[in-house]
Image (cartoon, rainbow, N blue to C red; front, side, top):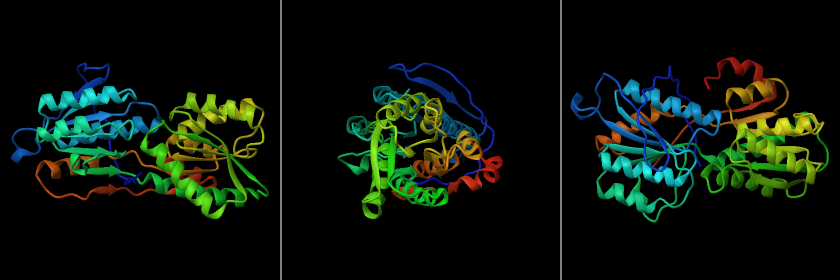
Length: 336
């Protein structure tokens, strides 16, 4: 649901320690400098990450850890391994530790009210990153830092128009859609935005003939695309909700004796380096950027929230779109 600012982020420094409940991996990062509370006690941030399912997510984690260290915050970090129950356990652990601020990128949209009410009862502010949630009480979190996923879906549909024109495609457009994790905000919103444009402008010539989750992973993208090609061998467009699923799908397309980027035109979302490599090789036709380097922006917001300052309800970030012709020039500048 949201849009991300291009932030330059430097080297990644991480200190690791510890185990947490419900199998979630947790570590703690800290720095010798001080921040918050007048330069005395370090600000402690509890951060629960979705997992490490993709190159995008790894870059996002690195950015958060490096930025927390640079800001001088004590970071309690937990990897939920894509399980909501692990994330809820991590947040409860942060509450028990009396951290100053809790931030998390939610695995799915719903099911957070109980644990967020527990944080509110202990007067610990919560900041959402990357993904949104649906709650019965909007005061349960302070702000959301991240991208407009619905708009990313719209942008994917609009750039597909350019891809079709560039390829000189005539006739029916038979689209396979690789969805993100079921119930996750980017999966819901990227599908919604794409369909908005399709229904408004392409009712007669575009059709989604197959759509299924690949769980944002390369393995999932490969497996699902192979099944798509067996049941719908005349697919001529792939829309993947992230680069990693698109990269997995490329393997399946090649295994089926087809040429990705030619026999099947491909549009993906994220803009990770591996995606740009594939685009420079002609295997992906266009990428809608979703920048993972949210760390610096998140740390600014965390400090403001801790200091009781008012922040916007949704802090969107800035992104770009890239066609295949731009890939080689853009590739050296990709930071993730």
